[in-house]
Length: 251
Image (cartoon, rainbow, N blue to C red):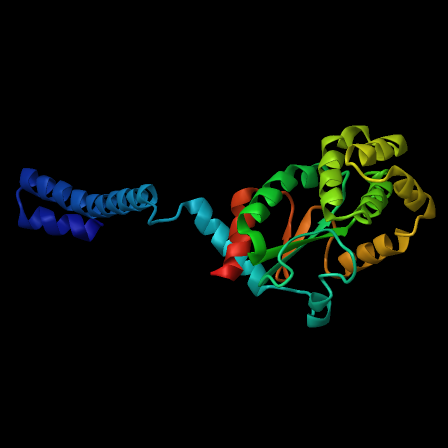
Protein backbone atom coordinates (compact mmCIF):
# COMPACT_ATOMS: atom_id res chain seq x y z
CA UNK A 1 0.00 0.00 0.00
CA UNK A 2 2.82 2.52 0.71
CA UNK A 3 4.10 2.01 -2.84
CA UNK A 4 0.59 2.42 -4.21
CA UNK A 5 0.14 5.73 -2.35
CA UNK A 6 3.60 6.94 -3.37
CA UNK A 7 2.68 6.37 -7.02
CA UNK A 8 -0.37 8.62 -6.76
CA UNK A 9 1.43 11.26 -4.72
CA UNK A 10 4.16 11.54 -7.33
CA UNK A 11 1.80 11.54 -10.32
CA UNK A 12 -1.04 13.81 -9.08
CA UNK A 13 -1.43 16.89 -6.87
CA UNK A 14 -2.52 16.08 -3.32
CA UNK A 15 -6.24 16.88 -3.70
CA UNK A 16 -6.43 15.16 -7.03
CA UNK A 17 -4.71 11.92 -5.96
CA UNK A 18 -7.00 11.69 -2.97
CA UNK A 19 -10.03 11.91 -5.30
CA UNK A 20 -8.49 9.33 -7.64
CA UNK A 21 -7.72 7.04 -4.70
CA UNK A 22 -11.31 7.30 -3.46
CA UNK A 23 -12.59 6.50 -6.95
CA UNK A 24 -10.32 3.45 -7.24
CA UNK A 25 -11.38 2.18 -3.81
CA UNK A 26 -15.04 2.73 -4.69
CA UNK A 27 -14.60 0.63 -7.82
CA UNK A 28 -12.73 -2.11 -5.97
CA UNK A 29 -15.40 -2.34 -3.27
CA UNK A 30 -18.46 -1.34 -5.28
CA UNK A 31 -18.24 -3.71 -8.24
CA UNK A 32 -18.34 -6.90 -6.10
CA UNK A 33 -21.19 -5.45 -4.03
CA UNK A 34 -23.18 -4.62 -7.16
CA UNK A 35 -22.53 -8.12 -8.52
CA UNK A 36 -23.64 -9.73 -5.25
CA UNK A 37 -26.78 -7.58 -5.14
CA UNK A 38 -27.64 -8.54 -8.72
CA UNK A 39 -27.07 -12.25 -8.04
CA UNK A 40 -29.17 -12.12 -4.86
CA UNK A 41 -31.97 -10.26 -6.62
CA UNK A 42 -31.97 -12.71 -9.54
CA UNK A 43 -31.89 -15.63 -7.12
CA UNK A 44 -35.00 -14.53 -5.21
CA UNK A 45 -36.84 -13.61 -8.40
CA UNK A 46 -36.23 -17.19 -9.58
CA UNK A 47 -37.58 -18.56 -6.29
CA UNK A 48 -40.71 -16.39 -6.55
CA UNK A 49 -41.28 -17.56 -10.12
CA UNK A 50 -40.73 -21.18 -9.10
CA UNK A 51 -37.63 -21.56 -11.28
CA UNK A 52 -35.09 -21.50 -8.44
CA UNK A 53 -34.56 -23.31 -5.15
CA UNK A 54 -34.10 -21.87 -1.68
CA UNK A 55 -30.97 -22.32 0.48
CA UNK A 56 -32.93 -24.79 2.63
CA UNK A 57 -33.88 -26.81 -0.46
CA UNK A 58 -30.27 -26.84 -1.67
CA UNK A 59 -29.16 -28.04 1.75
CA UNK A 60 -31.78 -30.80 1.67
CA UNK A 61 -30.67 -31.90 -1.79
CA UNK A 62 -27.03 -32.06 -0.70
CA UNK A 63 -27.97 -33.93 2.47
CA UNK A 64 -30.05 -36.49 0.57
CA UNK A 65 -27.36 -36.95 -2.08
CA UNK A 66 -24.78 -37.47 0.66
CA UNK A 67 -26.89 -40.09 2.42
CA UNK A 68 -27.48 -41.95 -0.84
CA UNK A 69 -23.77 -41.88 -1.65
CA UNK A 70 -22.77 -43.10 1.81
CA UNK A 71 -24.97 -46.14 2.35
CA UNK A 72 -23.16 -48.28 4.93
CA UNK A 73 -25.34 -51.40 4.99
CA UNK A 74 -24.11 -54.30 2.88
CA UNK A 75 -26.10 -55.65 -0.06
CA UNK A 76 -27.38 -58.65 1.89
CA UNK A 77 -28.81 -56.43 4.63
CA UNK A 78 -30.28 -54.01 2.11
CA UNK A 79 -32.09 -56.91 0.48
CA UNK A 80 -33.55 -57.83 3.87
CA UNK A 81 -34.71 -54.33 4.81
CA UNK A 82 -38.24 -55.10 3.63
CA UNK A 83 -39.33 -58.04 5.81
CA UNK A 84 -41.30 -61.03 4.64
CA UNK A 85 -44.77 -61.89 5.88
CA UNK A 86 -47.62 -59.75 7.13
CA UNK A 87 -46.26 -56.30 7.92
CA UNK A 88 -47.88 -52.85 8.10
CA UNK A 89 -47.56 -51.17 4.73
CA UNK A 90 -48.88 -48.42 2.48
CA UNK A 91 -48.43 -47.87 -1.25
CA UNK A 92 -47.67 -50.22 -4.12
CA UNK A 93 -46.10 -53.66 -3.76
CA UNK A 94 -44.22 -53.13 -7.04
CA UNK A 95 -43.21 -49.53 -6.31
CA UNK A 96 -39.75 -48.40 -7.47
CA UNK A 97 -39.13 -46.75 -4.08
CA UNK A 98 -39.29 -48.63 -0.78
CA UNK A 99 -39.39 -46.81 2.55
CA UNK A 100 -38.70 -48.87 5.67
CA UNK A 101 -39.59 -47.03 8.87
CA UNK A 102 -38.40 -48.23 12.28
CA UNK A 103 -40.83 -47.02 14.94
CA UNK A 104 -41.31 -46.88 18.67
CA UNK A 105 -45.00 -46.20 19.24
CA UNK A 106 -44.12 -44.38 22.48
CA UNK A 107 -41.56 -42.09 20.83
CA UNK A 108 -42.74 -38.46 20.62
CA UNK A 109 -40.60 -37.82 17.54
CA UNK A 110 -42.20 -40.72 15.69
CA UNK A 111 -45.60 -39.37 16.68
CA UNK A 112 -44.57 -35.94 15.40
CA UNK A 113 -43.44 -37.35 12.06
CA UNK A 114 -46.31 -39.70 11.21
CA UNK A 115 -48.85 -37.11 9.96
CA UNK A 116 -46.31 -35.82 7.41
CA UNK A 117 -45.39 -39.37 6.38
CA UNK A 118 -49.03 -40.34 5.90
CA UNK A 119 -49.77 -37.19 3.90
CA UNK A 120 -46.83 -37.75 1.56
CA UNK A 121 -47.66 -41.43 1.08
CA UNK A 122 -51.27 -40.57 0.24
CA UNK A 123 -50.01 -38.09 -2.36
CA UNK A 124 -47.36 -40.36 -3.91
CA UNK A 125 -49.63 -43.40 -4.04
CA UNK A 126 -48.32 -46.55 -5.71
CA UNK A 127 -45.01 -44.98 -6.72
CA UNK A 128 -43.59 -45.78 -3.28
CA UNK A 129 -44.20 -48.33 -0.56
CA UNK A 130 -43.91 -47.68 3.16
CA UNK A 131 -43.22 -50.61 5.49
CA UNK A 132 -43.22 -50.42 9.29
CA UNK A 133 -40.71 -52.29 11.46
CA UNK A 134 -40.55 -52.31 15.26
CA UNK A 135 -37.85 -50.70 17.35
CA UNK A 136 -39.28 -50.31 20.86
CA UNK A 137 -36.77 -48.67 23.19
CA UNK A 138 -37.96 -49.96 26.55
CA UNK A 139 -35.14 -48.21 28.40
CA UNK A 140 -36.85 -44.93 27.51
CA UNK A 141 -40.43 -46.10 27.05
CA UNK A 142 -41.27 -49.09 29.29
CA UNK A 143 -44.62 -49.71 27.58
CA UNK A 144 -43.20 -49.61 24.04
CA UNK A 145 -42.83 -53.35 23.59
CA UNK A 146 -46.40 -54.11 24.68
CA UNK A 147 -47.65 -51.41 22.31
CA UNK A 148 -45.66 -52.93 19.44
CA UNK A 149 -47.14 -56.34 20.21
CA UNK A 150 -50.65 -54.88 20.38
CA UNK A 151 -50.17 -53.23 16.98
CA UNK A 152 -49.15 -56.57 15.47
CA UNK A 153 -52.18 -58.25 17.04
CA UNK A 154 -54.44 -55.68 15.39
CA UNK A 155 -52.61 -56.15 12.08
CA UNK A 156 -53.85 -59.75 12.09
CA UNK A 157 -57.27 -58.27 11.39
CA UNK A 158 -56.19 -56.25 8.36
CA UNK A 159 -54.12 -53.33 7.13
CA UNK A 160 -56.97 -50.85 7.53
CA UNK A 161 -57.46 -51.93 11.14
CA UNK A 162 -53.75 -51.48 11.80
CA UNK A 163 -53.60 -47.95 10.42
CA UNK A 164 -56.68 -46.93 12.38
CA UNK A 165 -55.09 -48.39 15.49
CA UNK A 166 -51.74 -46.74 14.85
CA UNK A 167 -53.39 -43.34 14.66
CA UNK A 168 -55.17 -43.99 17.95
CA UNK A 169 -51.96 -45.18 19.61
CA UNK A 170 -50.16 -41.96 18.77
CA UNK A 171 -53.14 -39.82 19.74
CA UNK A 172 -53.24 -41.49 23.17
CA UNK A 173 -49.48 -41.89 23.52
CA UNK A 174 -49.29 -40.29 26.97
CA UNK A 175 -52.00 -42.45 28.55
CA UNK A 176 -51.10 -45.94 27.35
CA UNK A 177 -51.76 -48.93 29.60
CA UNK A 178 -52.82 -52.55 29.06
CA UNK A 179 -56.46 -51.58 29.43
CA UNK A 180 -56.00 -48.59 27.13
CA UNK A 181 -54.51 -50.84 24.43
CA UNK A 182 -57.58 -53.06 24.65
CA UNK A 183 -59.98 -50.11 24.59
CA UNK A 184 -58.26 -48.60 21.57
CA UNK A 185 -58.53 -51.95 19.78
CA UNK A 186 -62.27 -51.80 20.35
CA UNK A 187 -62.36 -48.21 19.08
CA UNK A 188 -60.49 -49.36 15.96
CA UNK A 189 -63.39 -51.79 15.32
CA UNK A 190 -61.44 -55.02 15.63
CA UNK A 191 -62.53 -58.29 17.21
CA UNK A 192 -61.52 -57.72 20.83
CA UNK A 193 -61.67 -61.43 21.73
CA UNK A 194 -59.12 -62.20 19.00
CA UNK A 195 -57.03 -59.26 20.17
CA UNK A 196 -57.08 -60.54 23.77
CA UNK A 197 -56.04 -64.03 22.70
CA UNK A 198 -53.17 -62.62 20.66
CA UNK A 199 -51.92 -60.44 23.51
CA UNK A 200 -51.94 -63.35 25.96
CA UNK A 201 -50.08 -65.59 23.51
CA UNK A 202 -47.17 -63.12 23.07
CA UNK A 203 -46.64 -64.75 19.67
CA UNK A 204 -45.00 -61.67 18.18
CA UNK A 205 -42.24 -61.25 20.75
CA UNK A 206 -39.79 -63.15 18.54
CA UNK A 207 -40.63 -61.01 15.51
CA UNK A 208 -40.15 -57.83 17.55
CA UNK A 209 -36.76 -59.12 18.76
CA UNK A 210 -35.79 -59.86 15.16
CA UNK A 211 -36.67 -56.30 14.13
CA UNK A 212 -34.62 -54.91 17.01
CA UNK A 213 -31.61 -57.06 16.16
CA UNK A 214 -31.80 -56.26 12.47
CA UNK A 215 -32.31 -52.55 13.16
CA UNK A 216 -29.17 -52.44 15.28
CA UNK A 217 -27.32 -54.33 12.55
CA UNK A 218 -28.13 -51.66 9.95
CA UNK A 219 -27.34 -48.76 12.26
CA UNK A 220 -30.65 -47.89 13.91
CA UNK A 221 -30.08 -46.37 17.34
CA UNK A 222 -33.23 -44.30 17.82
CA UNK A 223 -36.60 -43.53 16.31
CA UNK A 224 -37.84 -42.58 13.90
CA UNK A 225 -35.24 -43.98 11.51
CA UNK A 226 -36.22 -44.65 7.93
CA UNK A 227 -34.49 -46.08 4.89
CA UNK A 228 -35.38 -44.90 1.39
CA UNK A 229 -34.04 -47.45 -1.09
CA UNK A 230 -31.34 -48.18 1.48
CA UNK A 231 -30.35 -44.58 2.30
CA UNK A 232 -30.72 -43.94 6.04
CA UNK A 233 -32.44 -40.88 7.52
CA UNK A 234 -32.67 -40.32 11.27
CA UNK A 235 -34.91 -38.15 13.41
CA UNK A 236 -38.13 -36.23 12.90
CA UNK A 237 -39.20 -35.65 9.32
CA UNK A 238 -41.50 -33.09 7.74
CA UNK A 239 -43.37 -33.27 4.44
CA UNK A 240 -40.66 -31.44 2.51
CA UNK A 241 -37.80 -33.72 3.51
CA UNK A 242 -39.83 -36.90 3.16
CA UNK A 243 -41.09 -35.87 -0.28
CA UNK A 244 -37.62 -34.94 -1.51
CA UNK A 245 -36.11 -38.17 -0.19
CA UNK A 246 -38.63 -40.20 -2.19
CA UNK A 247 -38.54 -37.98 -5.28
CA UNK A 248 -34.75 -38.32 -5.39
CA UNK A 249 -35.31 -41.90 -6.58
CA UNK A 250 -38.30 -41.10 -8.78
CA UNK A 251 -36.75 -38.31 -10.84
